[in-house]
Length: 382
Image (cartoon, rainbow, N blue to C red; front, side):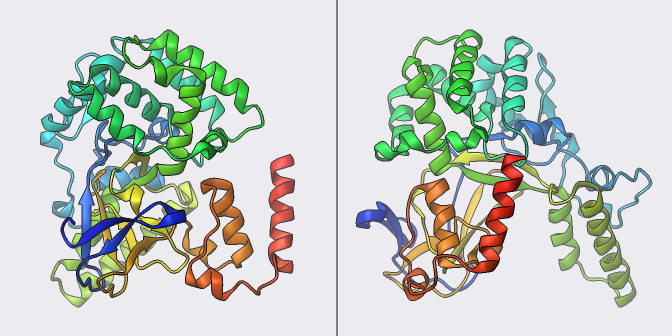
């Protein structure tokens, strides 16, 4: 048991996280940093400027708002509430990528960047560009995450422990049929072979041979497809939190609220839902948190970096399993059939939570959802 929760075998669901003490709404259950994480390639290419290691935004809040609204004249009130510490930022001398601190730069160099730095390994640029042509937004992972895993195995002082940690993410043989949906295409086999050849040509391999075979690379994609956790960070949302806590006059409050509403509206018009620096990572504890269509917990990134926090969304009693939703809020409102269709496609399981059991007598699909699915199929074919 660790910090008020424990890991237990749950039968068909594998390991689960269970409360060992009461948790109130908004209580933190645990927090952790990932074994490995990386920003999405297109997200980085489109100017979402984040720390190369922890994804902490490196723009000031004013720079961020100006970019996301395409308005260089925006002046953000209360700039002193911006959390970006420009004076702490450092950069790789060889390739120029940025880090939010010397600590992140050191960790990156120790774990993977000394091997993958494009300034020393120019072929990395071609590998990333090839990946981008295979995997367009909305993104679910990146070749950078795969490359970092391989580089970490190559450079780790305790290689055996790292490999054991990575293998703990592996599932049953069904892994082989999962994860390739990350490539979003009909030619997954050819894409895997292309990526495998490029990785072997690009990254010097001495210890990670099992990860870069065709089967090994397929297993890595499956591992990430089943266990990868999305990460989103935003300097603007952090600034908004501090503004909400700041004491100010009614007139100031009305003015800043109007500014925030207008900024979000203009961002939506210019970039839609792509507001955050986005990436994904592998987390040792988070991977054990199972899904429920009636979750009692949620995942947040309150430090606006890759540090993950699991917090309760309602009271949790000792002995209760702690669950999150693998589906977004809109999908949770769909029928049991539609929810489970999505879960089977992306996670290879059928949910048997209390909500799904209670809805077991529902028709397989409603007429409205049938129409939506037909539209989706037509979009995919076009």
